[in-house]
Image (spheres, rainbow, N blue to C red):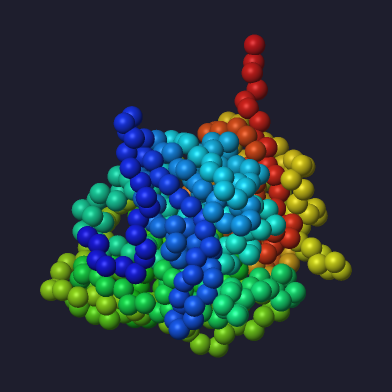
Length: 440
Ligand code: C2O
Ligand code: CU
Ligand code: CU
């Protein structure tokens, strides 16, 4: 059950004769209005955020992406487990050109994903100017009676500052700290009112900001986490607050059996030792829940997940997110990104345990393309429940161990910090997954 949501229309799509789901999407400069301010933004299909792309697990997809910007760009389908060749950020799309991404979704891939530009060195400014959109893959758990009856909203979180009718330029320091905007946008609107029916309310949250973290809470209401990134959890997990670093997604249920007016808040959080956090909570959106008294039972089970490794498994390799001063640079294992250098090599078919270290004084969200992972421990503490993640925040000084499954594909993928400024300034590395060894 869906009620009017301020999010833009769904993507331009149709079924091809062979059943393939065909989608068209364009990036273009667009005049938009935020609050009282008009500005020249960059959008997908003329809306900020871009249209919601809704796909089904297991289906074949062709996505034709057209670049109507005045600069090179490309389209990254963040989190999808598709062959690296079908989503290669090294390929840049020139102005006026169209490229087609053709792929098949895996059978158990229902979750919350998103799309954004990934042309190295241009990501920050293009994403900050508005380029981002939600991509939802629906599957069997979405048809559970409890979830099928829930009021569902997709909430794309972005932030923006405007100067002279344009997205505000970066100050030099913001290339270090990551730029945060003065306007907090939920589906392109400042503090929208979302309508929902009594019962279960389902919120799919996407942090599509370049650098801003969201520390979410609905005061007076526990949140029931049912999914993270492109994965369902095995069963709902109650949480009071939820930290969402850039690139992360969360799928939440709220139990609202009677009409109510709820507030989604962004609580203070210090992501850097250099920055003073905001003192108070910021209201992000109002949830107006209407209708007669209705039960709001949580689903007991969502989807069984296979555990990849034990919490005490020894790491096969170490990935260090670092920084250096004079000149300021962001590094992975001591090196700044070079698109022609392969930084890590793994073998297709292997399961690996990686230790991710952040010795810096600020948080960095680690992201790996194509191959989702399970978090084993954070600073030695076992992760309380299973999920397939594709972004994990590394707090300042933290060490996180993850288990990765390289069985699906071979090819080149990248890992990087999902603070766009850090990624554009070198905090990225190439991972080569070699085809399995042929034994004669
Ligand atoms: Cu969401 Cu390499 O990115
Ligand atoms: Cu990605
Ligand atoms: Cu970073």
